[in-house]
Length: 216
Image 1 (cartoon, rainbow, N blue to C red):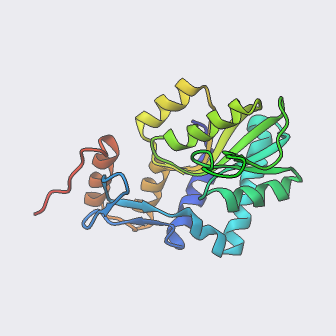
Image 2 (tube, rainbow, N blue to C red):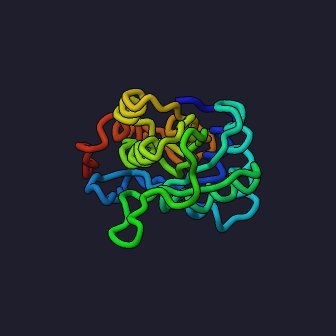
Image 3 (spheres, one colour):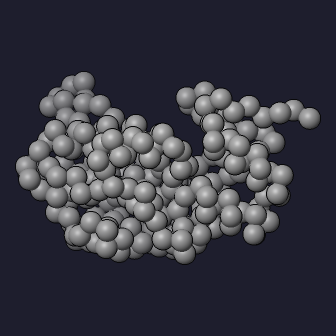
């Protein structure tokens, strides 16, 4: 997984400032998967802050060209990355499509919405990477449509080992604006969390599916 340290720290601070990322080691959140987590990330909030969404749009656009070359099409993963994906495509002057988690049950039963041609080069925009499974479903749908997926960009990744394994197995290069390690470093330096909370957050990241907070 690829990132730029300066960009990672700045993005993390912006996400914390607007509460797109919340850290609460003492009262963990419950994810849809049932996992208990001391962190919650909702990057859709970025769209409500023009200066920050412009920053994300421009950083994505710059790094897409740097890492993968200018593609023919930008694809957003539904639903969280549709908004920011459209902004990136507009900024780069490129067509945009989005990918559903599964084909529609009616009509043309599309999974990829928009105009694609076989052989086109596509970069996928995602908002958040956890295990990577849902993101890679989108990649597979695009590959089945006959296009060349050059890589994926995401706003934030939790940095789970399983995600790295999944992306390597799928042969997909991933660039992220920020990541869990840089978030924790910045959070301690800026006093968002204490050293003891840092230890809890690191423990969770090692084994998130089995992590349980200890009640004192």
